[in-house]
Image (cartoon, rainbow, N blue to C red; front, side, top):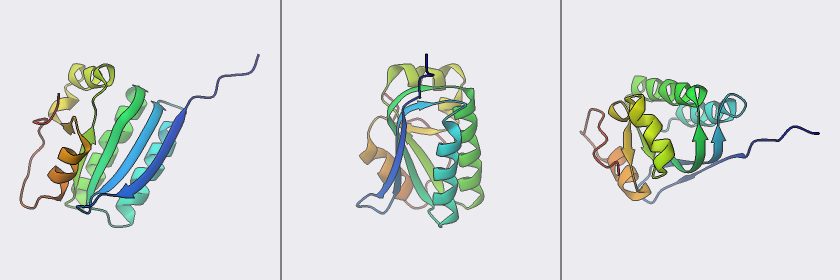
Length: 132
């Protein structure tokens, strides 16, 4: 019996407002988290300061995935940039709530709200005002 390969896809694009959107689909865990880390780090190293991680297509995330997200947030904060998450999956969103990371990340139910949030100037502080 062959091992099951986890589904993980990542691609990026620019929003109309200039945000760097990273679309993530599938599962984020020990075996797929390095791919997310690479994508996020590359975006930051290319100078992106307004990043949206669209997790709408994420079905599962574990502590390794959360660690990658926290490291990405630290990296973007060090560059005086902004990071927002799009998350409408109740199971994934519940993990953020249980770990109190919904208080650390700016989480939105829609991509447009997240893009607007990261591209507005002068706003500060983490909140989950847009979370469902």
